[in-house]
Image (cartoon, rainbow, N blue to C red; front, side, top):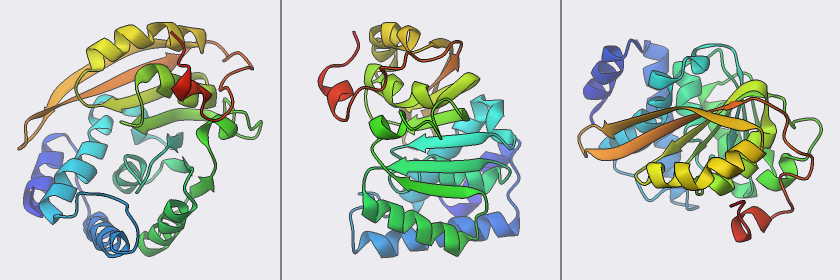
Length: 239
């Protein structure tokens, strides 16, 4: 996906990029590739692939969920090199973004990136999602929580739903197998106070690979015992 196609495909979805935003994506790409030589941020470094599989793919969440187009408080769990929240923040600058990641080096990259891109209302926190979800300063305080292909839905729900305030939404970005995951994860979602309210399936253009965006509404508070201690959700998922 070259820059021109990136611009035009977003335009088709009603998203017009300014010169400043285009420059931010260019700087994002350059910074990502530069830092990737020192630390493992992504296996995808070819410019057209980064624009398609990281930038465009991240922004697709904004095609299906209107909440990103507001000044919502957004928490991105395990964002790695900043996906999906930083591309969403560039496109929808009103968003207030918090990224939590367990690797200190990645937090260092994100802090540098935010400085280069001159992003405002962003914060980066070095923590495990399980610990972060029990922190009273952040628990049930976000309008939107996102995660992109971090773990299967039953595990992901335990890491993310405790952070969503009642009335807010958890937006999970998944590749294929979302249907099976949704069925297997229904009990966990319900137990943690959520309800799956929408599933959007589409093909990522050019490479034609399946993508799914699950919207889970937070209907009631999450029981205090969740998330359980670090490592437990993955080892003993709610089933």
